Amino acid sequence: MIRPVGFMENYYIPLLEGQLLKGRLFDPVRAQRPLQTIASDDIGKFISLAFARPDRFIGLELEIAGSELTSPEAAEVFSRVLGRRVKVHHLPMSVARLSMGKEWYQMFTWLNKSGFQADIPALRCDYPEVSLTGVAP
Image (cartoon, rainbow, N blue to C red; front, top):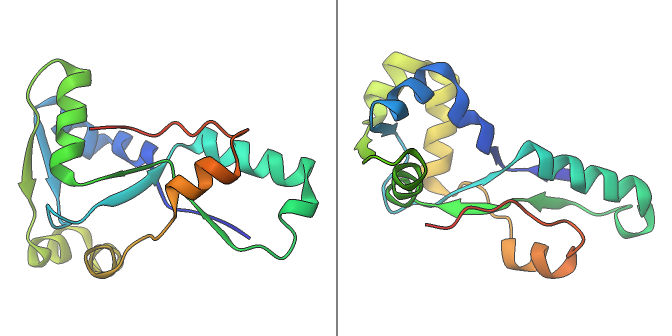
């Protein structure tokens, strides 16, 4: 079973992308809590490898990720890529609950408590044929 973490492409959700382009990253995840993400292309690489080499994957539960950044680190990356400052704004959980609904609130609560636990260095070592996109602060 291949279990991807949060998708990097989630930053393209129109509301979030619009705020990023205005220099604001609103995030209910605590600033010191890293969020693991993976590019959808990298998920495809793992799935392709699993079909090509089923002996390596049958019976395996594998959480996959390519990057792990706190929201301030993510803002630094967006600032560098966009060529202008992106500032993090912590979104209180009560606001997240009211504005996003119960399911999003539950997800952000979980991300703040434990979140994803992929071992990114081990993934890079064990599956070198999958060149993970990863993002560095």
